[in-house]
Length: 412
Ligand SMILES: N=CN[C@@H](CCC(=O)O)C(=O)O
Ligand SMILES: [Zn+2]
Image 1 (cartoon, rainbow, N blue to C red):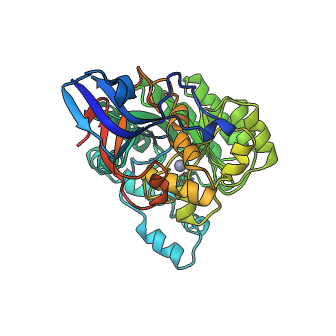
Image 2: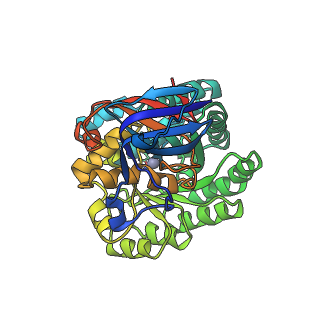
Image 3: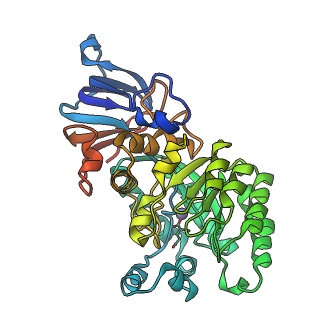
């Protein structure tokens, strides 16, 4: 099955030789072909060019994209979309004055979601999760990382990871699974953190490895959650099972998690709402992708990751949603891109690079995803008729996505 998309107003993020990621000033460049075509054969991009050079090319299906923009699908490198229920009551509690920290200290927060998930069947959890997944694919997401971390018992963490595995098998989008057992300390280990770390390292990890349920390992490295020593133990345990690290760091406090993560070659460090000069230096000497989650800042009213400081220091930056029930009940990458432009002063070019090729790098898949390059997967967004790609972040809250092609097939 082949698809030829013709009369494209702008074909965006076209790169003949795509680098694995973009950093600093290079993030300002977004290569485009105006009045273009793109040809897809089965699941692969095989050709593109100007309409003037189409030379009688044809295909099984032709899509006329007059007035429309075509881009690679978004690469959302940080989500927790496999969860049960919601936390709308905590949302109201925060409006009425409680802080995220106060809610967590009362046994709400992550522990609240864990209790609900522990009492939800695997089938129900799968059904709730795929509803979220389908809606984010329709919003243009074509590759997604999904974390565990709302189980916090061996059985419930395995349940989450098995659901992620089933999603990998059942959906055409690229899915990467991350084991986040060290997301919060369960109540029964309140005075025995080492006991919970032992459970993660000696019981959960071997089972997860045996069933091949995870690609990465993660820790919530934060005051009141897991400190540097704990984080190091988990990173090292992950290494034993060949699970590279993607770490939650610097959401509320900078406690040295960035330097620790880069020293251990983490694939990404995520959140970074609070950043120090030492963090920037550590990132400069590394191959670790910093990842910003602006919808989380929006929802919790916490600072935005200082994108200008990072990019102007020559660093790369990826954008992701953090879709989860507590800090970001939204998986809309279009909103993330708008918010990055409006609140973090990223240019539309920087934001689109951050949400495509850099997001792909933060999932270890930038050789196959994140740009319109011959040989890469045919994961494409066709917008509604819009004036230019600037219109995507400009018209925040508007759904400008008309068609999403995943692996060479229209996703319906
Ligand atoms: N910060 C840690 N984990 C999630 C939120 C967890 C929750 O509140 O449920 C995050 O990335 O924001
Ligand atoms: Zn997260």
